Image 1 (cartoon, rainbow, N blue to C red):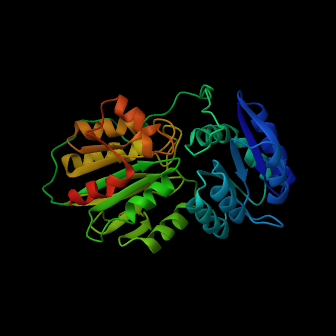
Image 2 (cartoon, helix red, strand yellow; image 1 turned 180 degrees about the vertical axis):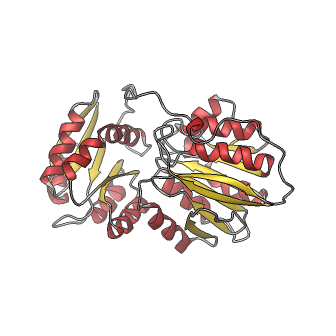
Length: 356
């Protein structure tokens, strides 16, 4: 059983989330609190497996509470934040402090919006419960994944074709896909790269309006330039392009240059942006000029796409189980024989530098 604690000053949010979670097998709401002070009193009696946490609350803000939890008793925390610029910046601080995922909420129409997110909510909670922290009392959940409708494949965005002959170019493309735990993992990788590193394109599962803040934060701590991707941005050394939340990112070959395209489209493998969509486009456009890296995350998005990159001659890498927060996406890629090399997170920067 996954025990969830909801900490949010909105009574509507607390009630809607409680009602949604109660419907899911193997998940239970152990309590809800309107602020961290009340939450800590509840946690003295029983410690939760997952905390859903708002940021702006009375008496103690969510980031202060999160840092306190992570320093004293590391626990999977999912941030429940508003879709605002201010909310996005604060959420990035929370992700940097150790939160594993984000649930978004609007300022208006809150009840209806949260009801529409029910399936995603349960998926996020299950992913968070699998996150690896040093907690002796917490056992891994044995609950089966939630049944979902048949997943749309990358076929809906890019027809499956045989890779064609590539135009002659010396440019290298590093394509990275990640999800739960990926914000911290990406920071660890990208901050260790020089400004001369090959061009990098990234899909990190993240809602709309948060990717710009995420890219801005990375840009402030990296030697490489990091930005949210725009259609026709060139992939070139020293630049990291982060896929936009709510849209797919594809790689195109334009003459002898690689450029990205940002496109609307349906969810693929539960996600938009989808790692599968990015990786398939890289297989088609770059072939052996590319390196594909799949990192921490729940589910299988990116596994099939990495296999296509591997078949097209790209060098493919998976993050190892010990260094993953959730060993889901890399595990599925390994099972498909899509991976040339399995590496711990701290060795991935050297691998990227070696491909310059």
